[in-house]
Image (cartoon, rainbow, N blue to C red; front, side, top):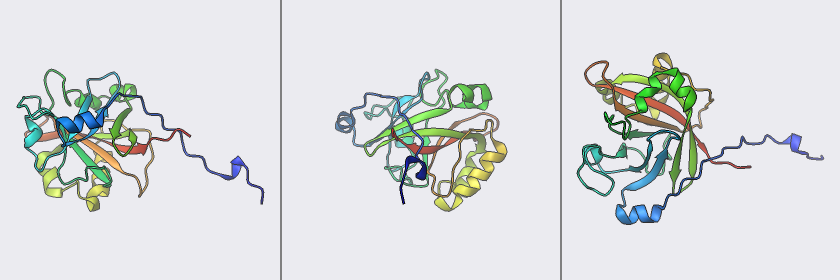
Length: 205
């Protein structure tokens, strides 16, 4: 059989913006640094940290200095190489707009239309995050259902789809890996706003 280009399904080209990140320098400052998160034309351009609990980076900068801004940090249950089906990142909603201060802007479809992607840079490889849903959920409901557990990801996606503030134009399947970002919201006590997307590995053809 003669094979031609038409006989193969080509992967979509995933271009990742170039961001100058020196992971070795970051590790020299603090070995807890695991990635870098970037959203073009927004303030989100930060390292992602990982500790052994939920509290350490709540009010500490990546170098360990105490600061009200805190850092973006991964849920300590998640694998630091983003190999889990769902990886969860937390950050404060600062009035200054820093950290995840702009995340709740995704409550407006117009904002999603301007910023449909974020980008994740890791030592293992880079990813485009195709944003999919944004939704409000109670802190207790999130914790009680342990949504970060792999067996509950489908349940989370169903909840997200039913309650989303925008609909991302991306597909996913049983093999897809998801990336969720959580910050405070103020619809009710303990409210959280979560934006979830699909991790697409960099592919340049």
